[in-house]
Amino acid sequence: MTPATAAAVAELVRAFPRERLVLSDPEKLEVYGRDESELGVFPPDAAVLVESAEEVRTLFAIASRHRVPVIPVAARSGKSGGSLAVRGGIALSTERMTRILEISPGDLLARVEPGVVTGVLQAEVEKHGLFYPPDPNSLDTCTIGGNVAENAGGPRALKYGVTREYVLGLTVVVPTGEVLKLYRHDEVPQLPAGCH
Image (cartoon, rainbow, N blue to C red; front, side, top):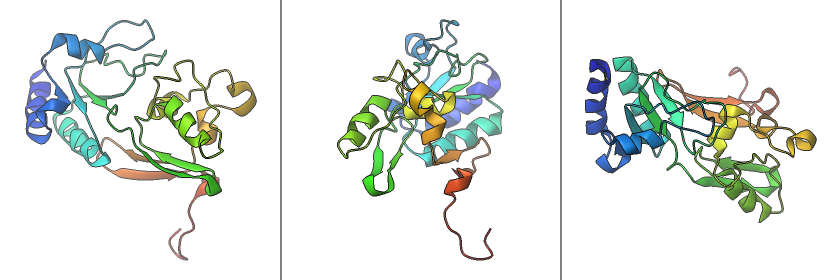
């Protein structure tokens, strides 16, 4: 662990409950250093199990201050290596952000946190007579956040398209700590005159 990473970890210990930090257990860190890509094992120096956008902001502020890389992870079921900490750093795990915030059948809309398992979302929208088509092979373990990051598809993608066709908007935290609300160009909410 570099001195910068050690300083960042010291701040993480002050900022987060101990039970949501994985710091010095090599076996537990190894879990956050692999996915289904068979590209190898790249354990992060630490992992933080965040529960809100505000906690993501806190983690990014600490990491940015010390110039330590942050690697978003959740189910680690991807095949591309996108969640591997190839240069060490801090794994930002969204595995505890599993709430379905809203299902609106009339609007054909669901709002979810990034750690929601895709198969769980599919089952929940079906209770409302809706259908969420993307069906990656890891449907029972992969998360919506990972699906968005990797633009996941699955066998139904040939007929219905991939994840990006079903994302109308995102609330994201960027490394500077800014929270951005992003919408598809055809889904921008109506703003009062003069605010465009």
